Length: 210
Ligand code: AP5
Image (tube, rainbow, N blue to C red; front, side):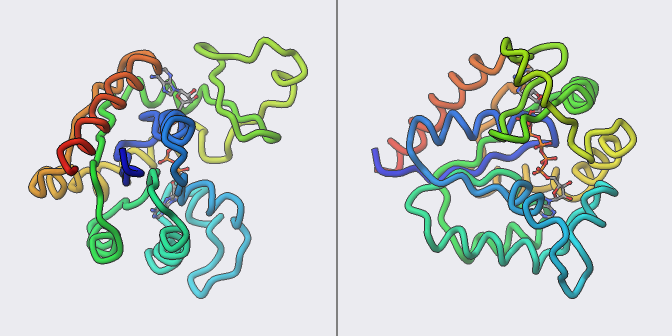
């Protein structure tokens, strides 16, 4: 199988980061995540202000900043999983001009479950691994003691992020459906079950292209 070019689409908390890890481990492709890139450069001065100001309000960082991150990452990638990009129609049109996709996998999860997942998420600052206070805590106490909550995972900001998703990102489902690229994955299952459905969808899409 040639290196797949995968876009993971879904609301905040749908499991894009969790499933990207499985994709990278299985296919060895590049993980292109605008969220992580922006978190690593939160205080970078841009002509629009610092990314932190947008992220902590749950808003989108301006397109030119994000498009530049993605252009640089795509230039080095032979096969990739895009996680968190595009997030609006103008980013989708920009991507259309810069990359071909094999599949757009939409992780479908209901709003109340998303709020539960995000407000309960904890991150290991040393490895970047995600955990959850109810569903998935590390057995090692040393790891559990150093977990932190992301600044934008408070309930108020989570609700704002979901509203921004509904307004800006949701229309991309139809955009990719019309292009025949969209595969809907039931994201409300266990992480292993989601991965099994996703893996089958990816392998089917790549086989169709060959
Ligand atoms: P970003 O970091 O991309 O955040 P997001 O899209 O809001 O997505 P998350 O990382 O919160 O969720 P996820 O879907 O990866 O879920 P995860 O696997 O962690 O973006 C942050 C901010 O950066 C944005 O708000 C914006 O300001 C800015 N930004 C980023 N990209 C941008 C762009 N393109 N344009 C403009 N601005 C941009 O899972 C969540 C939790 O659920 C975890 O605790 C996990 O353990 C648990 N979990 C996962 N799967 C399951 C399951 N199946 N069952 C139970 N629990 C599960």
